Structure formats: structure tokens, C-alpha cells
Length: 390
Image (cartoon, rainbow, N blue to C red; front, side, top):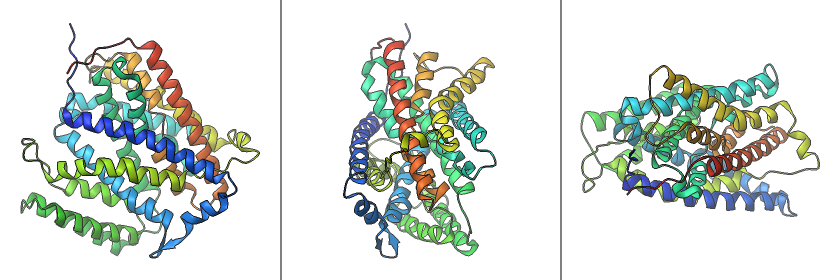
């Protein structure tokens, strides 16, 4: 009789946090859309553009608070690499292949619709997966989902986010100021030395260095959220007993609730101010919108399934315990919920082009809703009930 992989307490706490965060994210999005399309719409949108300490409130959220979000993503990835699903090469290969397929195929679909057009810059929009919404959707299915699938989705989504971070750093950065970038890299190297050479475990020292690194990165022109990921890999990590948690463990556990209940809801309030004009449905037929919708709804599950099947067929990796192909296809469908990172990349891709940003957000909103509903229906009716073993 097959046995299911037991989930650790850390993962269970993470899962519960993501589930609750997804609910709050939905509420924040609904509030934002409602205000934007009300008589208070102009004032609501203007509020996020008002200046505070040299930056707009929207910039503080997108460049500042989202750096904290990416810091947590980096810490999660570090944990997975050391002691989680990604620490064993054979286990890490399948979600890695799935993530590459789930980013490459949507990008190719978007490129097919937008090659040589001004909207080609939106190629990164359908590549992302919103881990909070994906995990929240899985939570709705309860015992129908094998625990190993939840672990697979976390690993796949984290690698997916890492690819998105690399995309942002390489392709959505203009006019790099090399001295400031060098300063940020110098701080990063200094933090690595504190960790690897001097074995200093004082978390406040790393956080102060992280703030300095973020300031340099912001001034360099490279998106400041990259500093969050870099900081994550500079902070000491060890896998000794729960009674002696590493600074990385401490910070990750501390950040889960602020990110889920403050950072992401504020991001949604500031960035999902979607204006549904009289022709909003017609805008969904434009090349960029079609690339986003088809990339997320069709490209994601297609890429995840095809590349994973290739890897399993040639013997590079195997399916996790109790996970069947129908589970993996459903996970790919839920991977089409791009939302947070997709909207984030939309802002970077189209900048001040307000109408194009708005149309792209409508496409992301529509595609994410479709992907979530289709994925839930698929997993609900095509996956048998399973008993979670504690």
C-alpha cells in the first residue's frame, strides 16, 4: 500500500498562512476594483501616486514592501534547497522541469501573438505563478489532494518565482548606474563574508546590511526587489534542531504573517485598480491580452505537463508518491493563477502606458480567475479522495 509523505510542521504552518493570505488578497482586490470603478475612483488612484519621502506611495509598496516579499521567497527557496523538496536532486528535478515548462510555453504563446509589436515587452506577464492563490485553491480541496502534490506545487511555484525574479533583473531594468550597482554587490559580498568566513549569526546585522543593499539597488536602476532575494541567500541557514533555529528560519517564520496579511494586500490595493470601461471586454481580444490569457490558462498546464512527461519518460525523474498525472495537470492549471507577480511585471513592462497597463491587468485578472476555476473543477472531479496521514 503506497504511503504518503508526511508534511512537516513548518510546511503546515506555511500552508495555513498561504491559505489565509489568499482569502485576504481576494478581499483587497475586490475593494480596489470596487473603489476604482466608483465615484471615488480618481481620488483612489491619485492617492497611490501621492508622494511620501521622495517616492510615491505606490513606489514604496512596489519597490519597498515587495522587496520584503521577495526576501521571503528567497528564504523559502533557501530552505527548500537545504532541507526541503529541492535538497534531494532527484526530488528537485521534477518541479524544476515543471517550472521551466510552465514559464517557457506561456512566454512562447505571448511572443507568438506579440512578436515585433510594442506589446512584446509583456512576454514575462504570463510566466508567473501566484503561490498564495495556488496554495489557497489547493486548501479548498482538502483531503482530495495528496500531501506530496502540495509540496510539489510549493517547489514548482518557488522555482517559477525565481525565474520571474531573474527575468525582472535581466529584462526589465533600464539605465543601470554601475557605481550604485557595484555598491550593492559590495554590501552583498560583505554579508556573505560575515556568514561564510566569520560565522556571525546576528540577524540585525544582516537586516541593516540588507537595507543598505536595497538603497544602493534602488539608486542603481536595477529593480530594488532583487536586493530582497540576494539578502535571503546571505543570511545564515542551518538545519539543526528546532530548539536552535537559524537566523534564516527565524526571519522566514516572522515574515509569513506580515507578508500574507500586510504586504500582499497592500500590493493588491495599490495595483489592482482596474478600470472596467465600456469596451473592456473588447480589449481582451488584443494581441497582448490574448497572449496573457492563453499563456496562463493554456500555456501553463501544457508546459508543466509536456516538459514533466518528457523528463519522466526519459528517466531523469519520477512522479512523487501518490501523485498521478491528473494531479500534475491540475497543478499546472492552478499554476495559471499569475496575479501578484504577473501584475508586478505588467507595471514594469508598460510603465506609464496607463491604458495598456489597465488592459493587461484585466487580462491577468480574467486569466487567473479562469485558471483557478478550471483547476479546481479538474482536481475536484478527476482526482480521487485521499486520506492524509499524520
